[in-house]
Image (cartoon, rainbow, N blue to C red; front, side, top):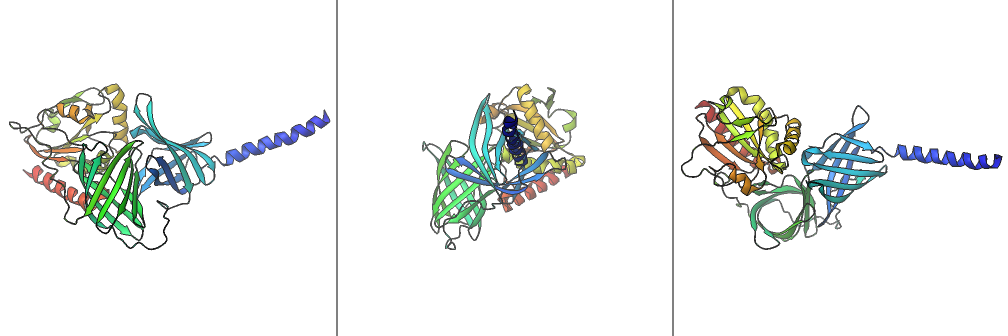
Length: 415
């Protein structure tokens, strides 16, 4: 028995040591991490900033893309993995803490029912680079400026016109693509010889742009999510512009007002005929809790409403979700309202299929994109319909939208 004890005691000590070592490694380092998703087009990098909260059990995590710091939901360690939820998008990162400087796991996002999109993920502590650059020589090209861009679907049936706007500093590039239905948010990347790579991760959308370029032309590929793919070409053109986004959606002949009745989160029907909207300037925000461009607009509208509602303004959000079932969609809308501290009404208007969404507002020619913003005067007449939203990642285009919005609303409230 004595010899057996000699064998058991070292073995027990080894187990205790192994467990304590594992325990010590189940807390991620705080600070900056370089995360990489294994997308269809190759590595899709983005930044993470992880900090431990005062309760010592939860973490605050930001996704980093250029100047954007996008906060994820409260994160936590379970067993040996860091969980970074993005409830508003029904998405989550789960990454095993494989060492004090590496994470290994995956990002997943619910599609419908129990179906999920999933991509493998790795993250490396203290690495601030975006894309790994092979060439050490300074770039002889500068992609800064505006680019007239055309995206072409793989089946060659659909084309989308866009305007690329980029700023280059050394080998680092930031910018976005503007379209009539919104922008591609904050893109960040690098020049490597005659190649340009840009990426963005916002919890819901995953974008990877790769191209070869010359002085005034680019030819590339665009990868989105797990399977999305398009080809694109761009020509440098400082005069490149999109068609007027205030003319894409409009009232059909014979109509000058908007009319609807949709349920709020409690099931109560809300209509523009309700007393709270009478003699007010009303902003109707067509949105979805799944839509990052809509979130950019909400980030502006929510505090704007708090500041201006007593001046004679109201906002109502018409949410078009994956499901028209209030029981299924109301929790998602509620999460959105909580996250963006929304004080105005948000109702469930239908599903996010554009053709089906258009049927819910038959006085409009069509709903082209999310978001769409409709501004109504005190008499109930529609004065402007703006498709899409140019978010903060678009710089001067965002500033102009804010300026035009505030100028029009101030004019209408004085009428």
